[in-house]
Image 1: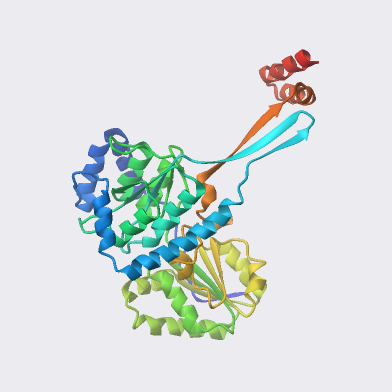
Image 2: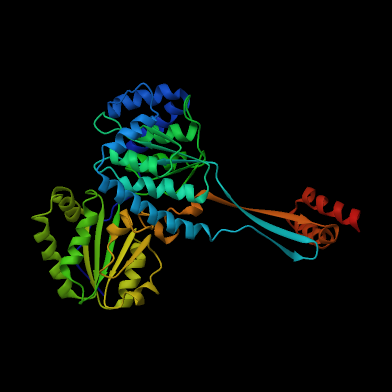
Length: 422
């Protein structure tokens, strides 16, 4: 049985007709018009019309010099954590060959893609961490050329901490271009930008729709909507911590989701009151409060098993477990982008500095995919090498299957070899 203390109305994550049409128009114009079209949209949307969109080494040095050393040290620390985790993931990939039958050798190669484009959003918050989440991971995967696009801030170029993070993460080319026009430029290329093979990175509804429409022309990591946090908490959880963590993600924007599933009615009531108390002093209360009013939800369930089942139905981007036995939940939960276990582990760690990637599935997509990782940048391809002995074993089976399908030309290729080698 489920009891809702606060319930949010369902929302559709599909792009509106207006967003779809606007994105399609921009993509078409950039595809056909190249840099001239990019410049038109840059003037219109960002009041940005530089001599060149490519960021120079001098601009990168100026941005880095303007930052306090403590911030640069913090970015370097976070980058080291992301790099180490990605390196361990990279070790999972290996090339091999195996002889499955006498004279039949099958193989696998793990080949990094050649060109990747990373979009690093600006928006309400310049997401510094998105730079190393996308660019560093690509470099660890072995991508030869990684380019990055980020929007100008207030007509003054890329946010300096973001630019420093992009450059120090290993981007080979950096362009100060925002929004849909940036993604279209990376996908199709312009007079000054060579096209890429895959696009990655978060963004607003227009960026998400652009990735959807560009998929096929290029690969993409995933289509991410507004951020989500779901917390499972029992009677032993601290309502102050639960409320703070819900509001921590709520400040992303009014369309974000902040959800609580609790096995304790008392704890749920305490959290409901604590959120209102914390909002009174929260510097970003205008945004977080709007999110909580529109998209906040608290539901009380009767058992741990029911909490697991409901969490798997939501399939949230971030899933935080604040219970007496978080490992019990960890062994049973299946649908989430990233899992945060125990009071000592907050979602903000994953967002910024602990080492896992913060580009994650939203809108229930965690039912069928994980987030960005080195595997998104690696093609696992196969090979076959047969001797005459091996071909004699495979040919008759292949021919008979082809004949059953009616694919007689296929069958002939197998029968020809069977006769030749027999």
